[in-house]
Image (cartoon, helix red, strand yellow):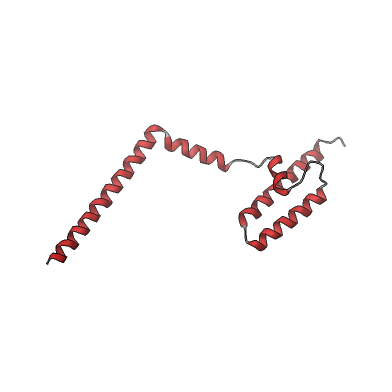
Amino acid sequence: MAAKILANLIVMGGGILARAFAQAYRQALANASKNGVAQETIQNTIRRANKVMTEQEARQILGVTEETPWEEIVKRYDNLFESNAKSGSFYLQSKVHRAKERLEAVQQQKGQDSPT
């Protein structure tokens, strides 16, 4: 009999805690939206997602300078991409790939800017 009462108290207490947690969470969301915190967080997330890699960052990732010929950049890219493929680091692979893409865009711009 005592075990049944104890089990009922635990179940009821758990239900009360769950409802209190849900209510506190809803209140926290309401407070955040009143203060503009939620909107600011969303805006910061969007800004970070749209961040474009700079030429400087791309050169650092590939370990090249502005004077490095394109063939050497491609060799560095291939080497870094393959070594990260073997170690299983998809994040580093994607960074190396984005760096090469950025430098390709810079290379194309320089080709278009030069007089023909």
